[in-house]
Length: 271
Length: 221
Image (cartoon, rainbow over all chains, first blue to last red; front, top):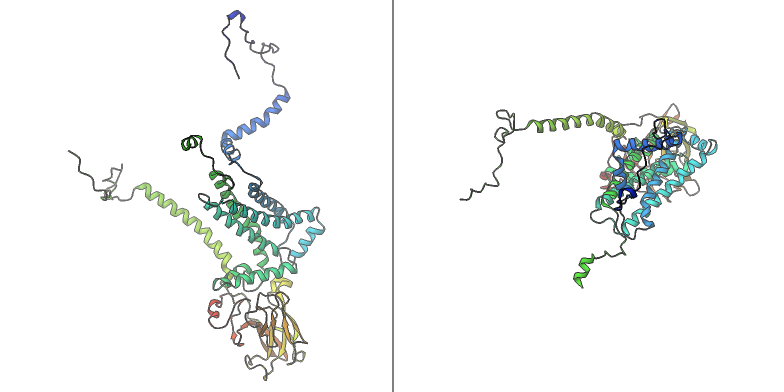
């Protein structure tokens, strides 16, 4: 911080430094060293992007927004669900590189991922256990929102989006369960599709849509695969975007055990 | 003197010329801006429909076309079967689906004394698809029962429900005999009186009384 000059006679005031440190050919500053230039590069790249995208005001508002007093670890369950989804997306994309959604090859390709491919067991295990973790986290997040009353005005729309996300997450579990194509996943899917069929009037049509026909057929597996890795994750990603937008716009709620503080002026008035 | 109050219900003129809009034509009622707005949105809607409707039809198509071929397949010579017990045979339901497209069926000769209904079929070919939720039942010869491993459905010798959650008897397949060989054809469903429904229904679909109208025959069967 620059302080104002004290009122001293000119002769006692400190002289400003001459321009440059006098080492350059014309008494200018020396050219910046390579290290200084290297340090400048990331700064100027970020500056270039920021100037053209206007990202920093948005990010400042989004990442440094105020949160209410009493915010605690339960408020991290939403982010945890999102990171579980990201983990599923990344491991799923790489599993898709080795998996073959063909009724006669699916089981073999899945067992090859587990038994032969480098780190295949780890990545498949992450995807398989991550799915369980994601469903757990989504339900815990739902419970937090419910018990903290965070679904009330003006956040009802976010609750509705969240319920759709819950259904989509469960659909991910249902469609992904078939893909290993062993006896368990096959018969579990047969039972699950027939459960859909038990709904009056629309049920049988829904089952036909899921199977791609009246019997578990040649394209049932690839239908489930396409739903599992393209349609539902796309919808989930889009709805997570809307969900986050509303969280940033509306802010989070204080926990219910904290009473709203009266303003000082109001408190004084009431005394 | 106060101005006379304007009638608030009096609407503005529908002619753009009367509303003082620059460049208005004689008799013009819709401004060009509104016309082009609507036009651009209509063009966008047509563009979305042009790719959306075919894609939707592509995804939903299998619901509306008949898929299972009306063909018969050989399950063995007539001497393989008798009227007293069931013989398991494997048939192919969906040829393109590999092992997942095959299914076991149980076949016996029709016994005129026992089979009053569906006596036109020379053989009784019972599907192993449980009428509860589609798990594979197995026939236990000692008790003359079909038993489902998933939720405890039990069926009698005719495939009729004798216990557990199934909503109707086990499905059957049409049969015929050609040159001494037994042929098995398309599937059909039965209600609890063993009356035939030529369009097979999914497991879990009731077929008795009014229920049959809640689970209609679908175009795909």
